[in-house]
Image 1: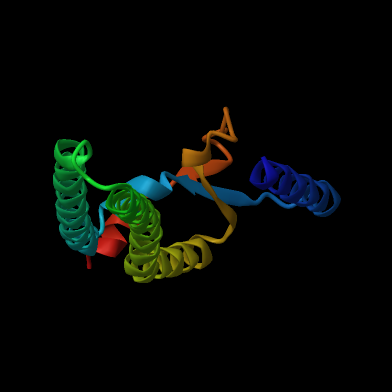
Image 2: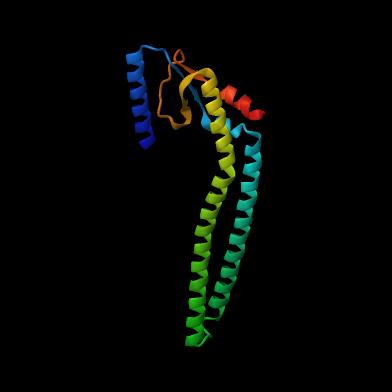
Length: 171
């Protein structure tokens, strides 16, 4: 919502400048996600992220199986355990469960951070490509159509540059 408000404000300022200067200006628009996904390195990053997710899932499965095994042992012997052993085992299970939950939460954070770091060079390269095309074509601005903030774009005033950006990024 904040982006939409900023976009509207920028467009109003630009329209005000346009009305004052009576100069025709153009803009470009594209699907940012389509351009990003067209990059050759995107598939490599996605594969690395899939491998990392698989490692975290394998570790999660391992600790869940360990917990389940200890819980089953606890259930099998709980009738025969003295009270102090029973309490000790219960606290061990509680601690193990808390560690497993913390691991899951931490792994989600680490995966998000790893993806952000892996995608950063691609996003920078895309932004640089957009800047180059914008300057070459004399655009006042370039709009990302993925946000659905612009239900209508007049093709007489704007130009879809997705293909040009995709071609530039393939080099």
